[in-house]
Structure formats: C-alpha cells, structure tokens
Image (tube, rainbow, N blue to C red; front, side, top):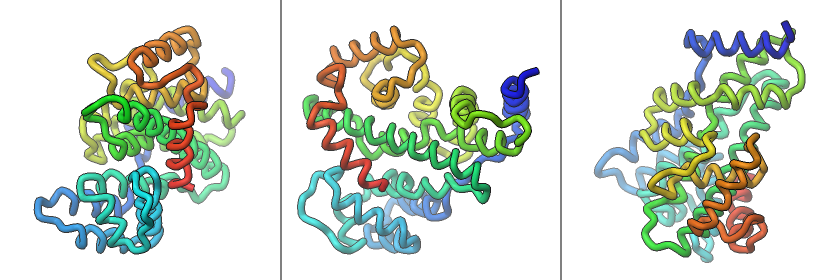
Length: 280
C-alpha cells in the first residue's frame, strides 16, 4: 500500500476513535472570554486582563491604530486601545490576536507546517475581512461584523492543526509537505467541529467550519461563510474550477465584490494590506 494511503488510513482511524490531541485556547484568551461575558465588566478591567500578556497588549494597540478600526488618530496605551475597540469587539479581537500561540510545536518539522497553516488562516482572514468591508460600505445594516469574521476565518480550518501534529508522528510515511497540508485540510471538518465544541464556540462558528469547503452560497445570504469562500477563491483554492467560477459570478451579482479580479480593487486591496499588517 502506498505511504500516502497508509497515512490517510491512520489519520481517519484516529479521528473516528477520538484519539487526536486537540489544542486548547491560550489562558489569556480564556480569561478574556470569561470576563467579557460578565455583565458589569469595565473597559479598565478588560485592559488589566490583556495587560497580563505583553505580546497581546502590543497587538491590541496595533489593531486600535489600524484602518481596521477606521480611525486616524493614534493611541499609545493599552487603555486607549481598549477604549477605542470597545467592549462589543474586544472579546473576538483579543482571542483572534492570541490564537497564534496555538500554532506552536517543539518539533522543527511540525512547526514549519503549523506556520504554513497559520499564514494560510491569516491570508483567509485578510481577504475575507477586506471583502466584507467593501460590502458593508455599500449595503446598509448587513448584520455582519469584521471582528466576528476575523475570528471565524482564523479558526475555519483549525482541525488541520492536530491532524498535522499527528501525521508528523508517522515519520516513516511522510512525503511531500504540500500533500500533508492538503490531506489535513481535506480531513479537517470533523476535527474542527470537535475543537469548536471543546472551546465552546457558538453555532455560527461551527457552521463556518462545516460549510466553507462547499461550493454553494449561504441562503439567505450573504453570510460569514460566503466571505471565507471568497478568500479561498482569491487563491484559486477549490478543485472544481467551473463551480468556483460560477460561485464567484453569483457573489458579484450579490455585490459582495465588484469584479472577477476583486483583489485588484483599490478599496479591497487597502483593507487587505491593513489586516495583514496587524498580524505581521
């Protein structure tokens, strides 16, 4: 039996038998979520929680100063940053900024694959948010928020992470790293849902994990998953090119993007670059 087929069978068995080691949310993300759910929590208290993680605090200031927040006056302190972001968005943005800590391994080869997964997730988030920003600027009251979409995009394929980690333990069967990433993504849906459940993420996050690989639009829509699909389309990521092209044309009729080469549109490209910079 070819090594790739053996690896596939091993991974499928471990998924079915719940034998994969699932990642856990960073402690600071758990604390942020718990405090954000308290009805009387203050901005100062949220700033105190975030301040316990200096790297996260620095990123929150970076977010507050970005075009993502739509402000031009710079802030220089964490308290100012938290005030600008606001309680309604602080939870999702803080968890999103802390997520990179999950993509860590002590093994060099595993780390290379996890780095590739993280960069792919950041790319998806950047394109998806840029397209949503374009859509929201032209459609009133869409009910779709950039902070929610950012977090959704970063975790849409989270199930690939423990699959890569497990596959790396089967050293004798490893081959082309690109095949491993493809395999991890193809198997990731069920594992992603298990992680979402373990992390107590809401139903809309689970829907994104379940449906982003399906080449059919949300109905009624547009929905969050549609913008993640646009990000996959932007990198020509679907195997069925005819369906991919048909879906893109549908999204254009919905005025989600203005043209086939939508990443060349200046408004979309500007927000894309800004979101990428937040994660750099």
